Picture (tube, one colour):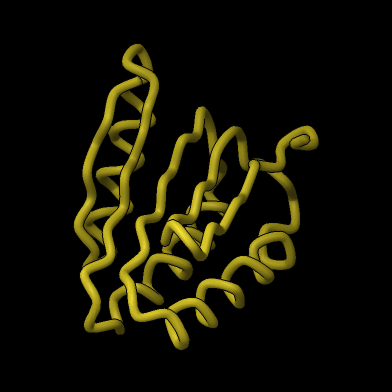
Length: 115
């Protein structure tokens, strides 16, 4: 269950997916996202399969965006073909734009899915 302002995060090593969903607006994003950044680094080191990072957010603040950039940057250094699936509410064009802003900053392919 997510706390107020904390997203659901689920790394599924067997399926090769990392889900980040909900709202991310906690104050200390560095500490909050450190564990998943470490888990992702370990996945990239030991797993032979690419990973798909699935974002399904309704809101995230600017300090969260910095953590997302750091997280996605880990995928750039790999020879595997990782990707991002950016799910956004159909009626929420701002979230689509936020995904496009992130895509510009990292060298990882994005797929956009309106939900």
